[in-house]
Amino acid sequence: MALILMKSKFLPSGIDFFCAGIIFFVLSSALAVPQKMPMDFSMFESRVLRLALEQAQQMSTHWDPSQRDCSGFVRFLYRQTRANTAGWYQADHQLHDYASAEDLVQHNFYFVQNQVDVEKLKTGDVLVFYSPNKKTEDRYHLMTVLKFSHQAAHDVLLVYHNGASGKEGAVRKISLRELQKNLNNEWSASPNNPRYKGVYRWQGWRQKI
Image (cartoon, rainbow, N blue to C red; front, top):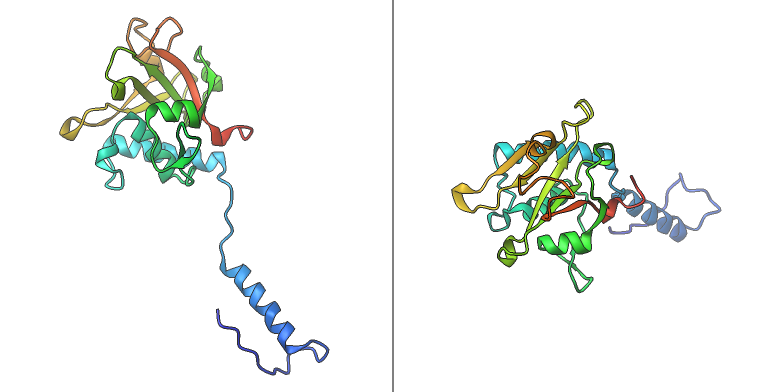
């Protein structure tokens, strides 16, 4: 911003013109720069509910096709809702634009519970599954929790990318109640399922919710 100093009858006679100009410059600059406000959880909640369900209908063109898997879905939700604009931590404890499913679980989310207590679940939490016998890139599977205020306690919705590529790739949704019907299901969220590792929550919400 250019600073132009000129005489004006509106300036108090006791104030030096140069100082008045500096004050004007500082105040104008402060007003021109938008203030960064911390993300409120209720704002995130409403945004992620809408965005996740939209992906189940049709995946956004803003979502890089090369990152369309279960962990990419989590990264996409947190980036697009602007909950996390800084980046993701990897094993080097530095921020990066990308984080694998393992990095998300170990360095960006924290363990909340093993036995699924619906009352303690929050929208944006992830159910984590780990299958050590699969290929490295397929060992983790993440399901994102959507919790609606008008739903019955056990009608929590889980949304996830199925991990397939090309035309077979899709975002699926299933109720927690339906998932738990068959406890022998490899994706059942039960401590008796060796693949199930618990519910995790984004580090950014620690101490906030």
